Image (spheres, helix red, strand yellow):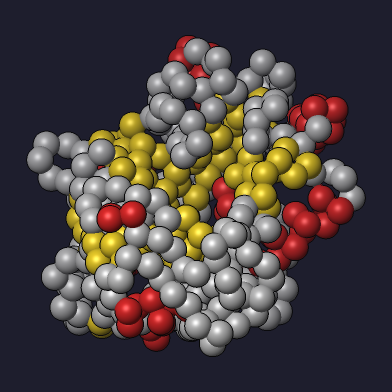
Length: 382
């Protein structure tokens, strides 16, 4: 937690990914590393070492913080052990000791350059500064965090330069492309150990070599969407490790995709043909015009539509949504109900935990509904 700025609220999903990429967790039989990380976090919260800043609508921790005194203690001990080097706070102890460089907010470009030169063998770089920070030269780099979805400003690196870090496990950056070729280069196939790839880019891009990262667990694209292209070696793709896939374009998808352990899926446009067969999927978002009526049985979060266009919700879709036994959060944005109202039956949302609106009955386990903008003053379930 000491790698984050003072008084900075930390997104739990980011913290979990960093713990996994840094190798701070021991694998537990039968559990994913992400599940173990969340259990460790809850244990730290129970001991009052980590503070809960904000909960999700489903009751899970969304943001957390650490007390200033505990953060200062973490920074001091980490500096003594050479675990990481925080600019302004620590003096470099030599090129072979400090494994992580922290660049706080307010750091100038010259200060960042000097810090990177003083620790040439650093394995991690976490940048909170809004100044442009040069690409680190360490070939041993495993973690590069230079993009934060909760803050404005990002560093734009050439995508080709990122893939020189063949040992990388976590890359979260803003990127730029050379010329008119908006695509992930084939050199991505060298990143055999990459666990997390988070990209911020204003233009849609393509990736024919996306399937050549066998250890990839989390891919997220913000602002620009990734268009998935047919793999060069056939019509079937299976990515066993993938758990998160966000910001993808699935238009003209005429081959078979399989993600046996997928948990979070967010589609920019298009639809998955075998969506209902994803039994591990817990969160599904589709910002485009939704046409399918069936959803995975164990879904907990469902978000359909966006503020860009209106779309129709048919009775079959409403019936199938109401039959999801574990659904906790539902968002239907700019949705038009054919009857002007969603009338639920006793069989829908079977596990009752209370109502959200006065006009809603029999909501069962459903804990939050967000209507967005409904056409014709359409009303939610009652």
